[in-house]
Image (cartoon, rainbow, N blue to C red; front, side):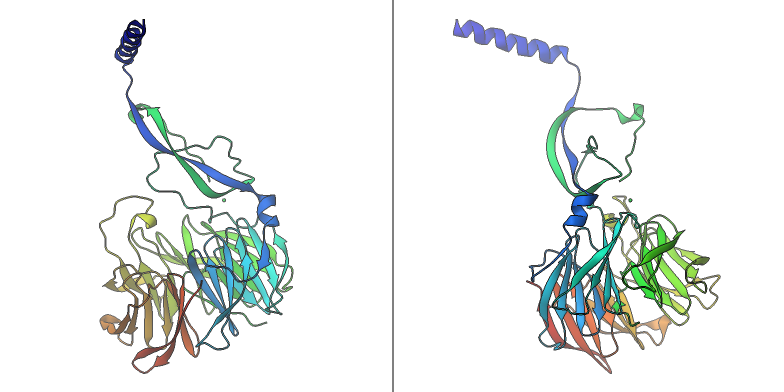
Length: 411
């Protein structure tokens, strides 16, 4: 009987297999892990020093340095002794990427919100409150690689905030996409100094925040209660902001956009300079804008691209008609900064490169520092700050470059 039963099972399996002419494959399916806006707001708090997960941007204010832990919050570092900086505390701010400070008030993004902290007592920082739903949520968890499908069932685009992904393998029928119309889901006093990768910029009584498409304008005359007063569409995939004189320079993945702020609450379009599709921070010095363009799939949404990473120097002496002046090939450029005739370029795993830029048609490489991966720099008056691979590095300026003060790994 057992043999007969086994035989019938085998025959039945073969019959089903032969009669089913569909093709199947195993695919990776990603489902968003979410929290609600209320849960995110309730989770903001001031904690003792914490271990860092992934260093992001840096910001310097007076004798303190603020290091972003990507999407986690901000490490507060006492830098009164640059040879031996110490961590004071950790600001737990979910989905945080940027900060800016004026008059002892720190402004930070948290998903769609702007969060305000009183840092007048650095060992007793107080969270003042939220300005809710004022920034498009550009910092949702990055889309995972090697995923074939996204499962958006149960996802509330208005209230749910993506903090991660659950990836599983599923057996699915092979679909001929030539015959299918695909649908897509939409996923939203004194001040300190930030790096070239910053999306926040304080200019006098206004805070300008770049999300993935707009300049958001906040009136901060009352430092405790910033008020959003305007927004100006730039283009999709806006990334960075830089200020010189009465102008804002917006770095995007398709070009540099220039806006006037003679009326601070209403940025006005002046001109733009187009380039190939790259990740794009920008700094400006006098009549020239310096733009690092980093190739790679993370900058072009998985599309192939043959162009090399580079530094482009753009002549902006005619602000209404920017023109490309020079191009220099780079390896993996991220942030950059300028101090006098010295140009500092963070070239990723290739390290920090220091150039003499007195002759832009013939940049002179003064030195390359490869002890740490270089992500972004802040050229201060008396020293240079660099962040990369969870390590804060500080240098003094010299006539021929820079010299090391300290290397501080946030642990």
